[in-house]
Image (cartoon, rainbow over all chains, first blue to last red; front, side, top):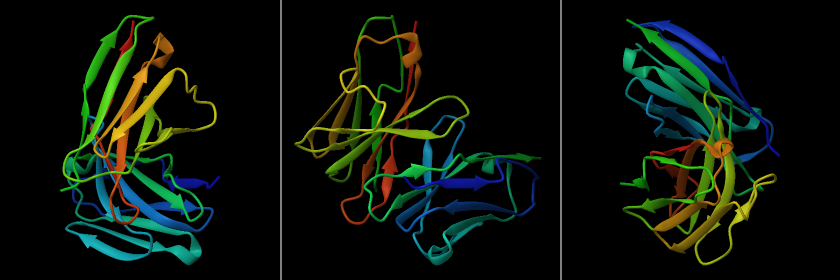
Length: 109
Length: 115
């Protein structure tokens, strides 16, 4: 099956800092989603981005499908950005999401 | 839009009993729903894919007789953990695929503790 690797595994930021999270995947995909899992466990949809670039407020994401990676940018980080960020992909020949290991982000005030 | 609910949010049960978890898509119809399991500080692992009106497809290593899945309507899927044991304690999360495209929306999860 498809392999999904996220880096870094852990990230500590000072409030106001910018950061980039990376997701590498091993095969062609027809779905790539970024999620933020809050402290209560709820997965919040951030982006549905199998290719291209999208922006939503302080967050933006870029997927380069031909090179099999996606980047999530967090700008001017806030303490509420803390949590775990997951990348998940659905390979073209499949019918299910495969999750990466996640990046655990802590934003300090 | 695209809201998925789960009930209950938290359940504690004794070893040997069965527990049913409901997953509902509130504002859209979902022909396909998914059940995941997440252990502390780990990623989500897919347990099974649930298609309305047909049998669920289980991932390798998931006991279909222990984790019973029923997708009886386009808005409801249920997961029943039968004869639960302490090792079944985990966070169970469902998702529903959007009616158009591939995007999935996730429920808030159910924390199961088996004593």
